[in-house]
Image 1 (cartoon, rainbow, N blue to C red):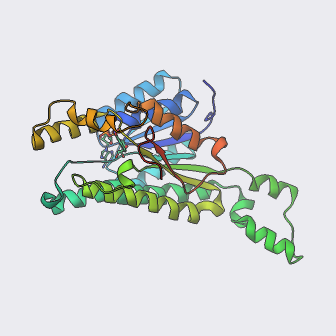
Image 2 (image 1 turned 180 degrees about the vertical axis):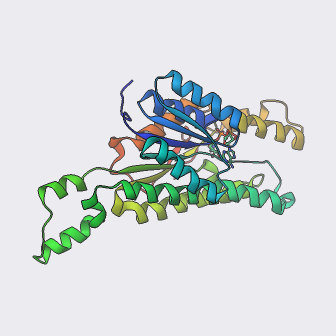
Image 3 (image 1 turned 45 degrees about the vertical axis):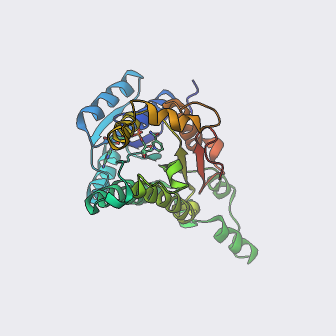
Amino acid sequence: MTQRFSGKVAIVTGAGQGIGKGVALRLAREGADVVVAEYNPDTARATAVEVEALGRRAVAYPIDVADVAALQQMVEDVVAEFGHIDILINNAGVLRTQPMLELSEADWDRTISVNQKGMFFAIQAVAAQMIRQLPAVLREHAGLADVVAADLAGERGPSEEELANLAGSYGKIVNFSSIAGRRGRPLAADYAASKAAVISITQSAALALAPYRINVNAVCPGIVITPMWEQIDRDRGRLFGAKEGEAVRAFVNQVPLKRAATEEDIAGAVAFLCSTDADYITGQALNVDGGFEMN
Ligand SMILES: NC(=O)c1ccc[n+]([C@@H]2O[C@H](COP(=O)([O-])OP(=O)(O)OC[C@H]3O[C@@H](n4cnc5c(N)ncnc54)[C@H](O)[C@@H]3O)[C@@H](O)[C@H]2O)c1
């Protein structure tokens, strides 16, 4: 496997299991050191051990991403340990299957706090650090437009060194939305709202951070059989008497490629968005769903 992320430090939230774990291991296999930012300390440690077995450095960092102060502390701790942060994967998320008319205020608040607020403030904390890491010349002239405008006004053109520094990217952020961010869900209205917000925040952050050469994109996975989907299947069984696996099969039948995604299907797309091949892609939400949604 190529070493596209050699020398890079990646924070992956919710990397104790499921897709986040798959992404953490994929980035590590391609050379990244990984911070496993995960609510469950036991699974955080287990993923960190697997990353280390791949020959990379890893830190298990127990955290609730809904805690904004904890996110800021995490950035300080990661910089103290590794010196820099190059990649942020906002993967942590929660979903509970509930008919819309029965959704409680507490469940609404928790979903929005983790999936939406946590993601926003993780971007804010990490992006501030990415900007601190920028080459001084780029920080000073954030935005090629400023340099070009100065050049046109005959005041000052960019030097060779400045032009070299202005090429490429200095940070990659990938946020987890979902196909539920593309369309409402009667049994997960809070979740769908939070995932639509992820797409909006991705666009806002991409615009705000473009002058600093930080790319911000989202992925919208379809159906991936992780502990989250196993829970959805159980919940639908409880609510509608569906048999084990029935809800999954019903969804998969609607997927043009006629299968669920593997964690590696999603990790591959995330790795692409973190790579130099995606330097000119920002503010996008990429469906990785076997053709389920096409917008
Ligand atoms: N599985 C799917 O089919 C699917 C489809 C679309 C989108 N997604 C999204 O992909 C992401 C990963 O999903 P998954 O299926 O692997 O889920 P999962 O439930 O299997 O794993 C989520 C991980 O996030 C952690 N986590 C939850 N709340 C946290 C918090 N507050 N702070 C830190 N960590 C926390 C959990 O402990 C768990 O390890 C989620 O954002 C989810 O919404 C999943």
